[in-house]
Image 1 (cartoon, chains in turn purple, blue):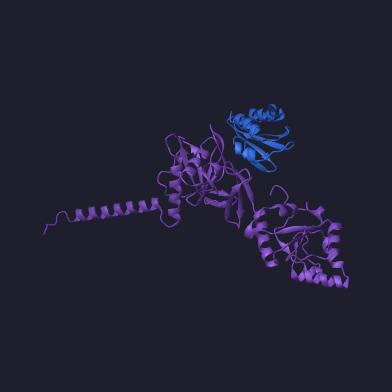
Image 2 (cartoon, rainbow over the protein chains, first blue to last red):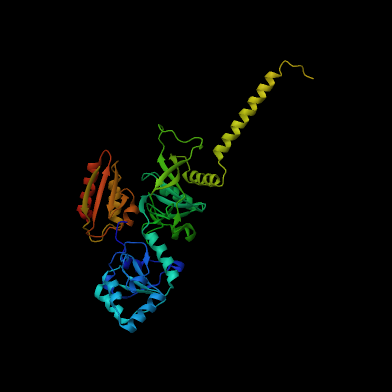
Length: 331
Length: 87
C-alpha cells in the first residue's frame, strides 16, 4: 500500500447499504490522522479487567454492549486505571457500537491522548463483519495497470497492450455492441481473498471516460447511458492486443491454454494481433464466448482435435480391413 | 533505464491540457515512458491515466524511460514540466 490508511480515511470511505459503517467521531479529533496498520479488531474486555498481557494496541478497539456496561460499572466505582491505560497505549481508535456513549471521563482521556472515540449505530456483530470486510479490501495487495477494463457478456476482461494499439477503440465498439466499460487507461487491481482480482477505476469520479484518438475524451455514461458502465468487476480474463508481427507465431489451433500472473493470481490470457481489417471487438467477443464454453466443459479446439483423431483412426481401421479382405471372394 | 525526479510547479497541477502536452511529447519517443507518484506508476503515453493520477501543484513525480531514446525522452519531459507547460 502506497499511503498510510488513517482513521480519517476510514470515516471518509464512501460505503453504502450493507457496507455502511455509520461511524461518527465523538471525541479526540486530533488523533484522526493516526494510521490503521492492521486489518483486524480487538475486543478489550480482558484489558478493561486489568489483564494487559498480549494486548494488541495496534488494532482498532471495539467496545460492544458488554464493554460499555463494564465501563459504566467502573464509573460507579470510580476506577479508571485500566481505561486510561488502554488510551495510553494509543490504539488507532476506539469504537462504541449500538450508539453507546461513553462517560465524560473517557472523552477526556480521548482528547488527552489523541485517540479518537467513534460511535456507530450498528451492533457489534454486524459492525465487525462490515469493518473486517472493508479493511480486507483496503489492505488487499494492489496494483495499477495500464489497460482498459470491460465487461463482455458478463465476464470481466482486461485489455492490455501498448498505447496506440487500439484498446480504447476496441472498448468503444464493445460498448456499442451492448457490453460495458469499467475503466479506461488506469485500472486499480486488488487481490481479495487470495485468488480473486477486482478491477475498478483509480479515481471513481473521473472513471467512465474514454480517450479516443481524433475525438478526444468522451463521457461514456452520458453518451451511451448507464447500462454501458459498471463500477467494479472481477477480472476473469486478460486479452493482450499487439501490432501484428509477421515474424511471430500466433496461436492457430487454440489447444494450448495461456495464462499470465497478476498479483500472484494466474489469469487465463490470450494474445490477439491487431492489423487493419481485423475487427478486434468481434474477436474479443468470440474469445470470451469460447472461454466461457471452456469453463462449461466444452473445449472447441480439443473437441475438434478429438474428432479428427477418431476419424483418422476409423479410416485407418477401414483401410486395414479392406486390405485384408481384398483377395477373399465376395459372397 | 533512465529516471529523474521533477516537481510540478504550475498552479493547477496536471489537468487536461498539461496532460495532453505530456502525452503528445511522450508519443514522439519510442521508449516505454512512465510517470510515478507515490508508488502509483502510469504510462506517460496515456492521457486518462495521467489525469487520474491527480498530480497537484508542488508534487514530485518520477519520470522513467527505457528504450533506445530513453535519455532524450526523460530530458524532454523534465524540461516541459520544469517550464510549467509554457503557462
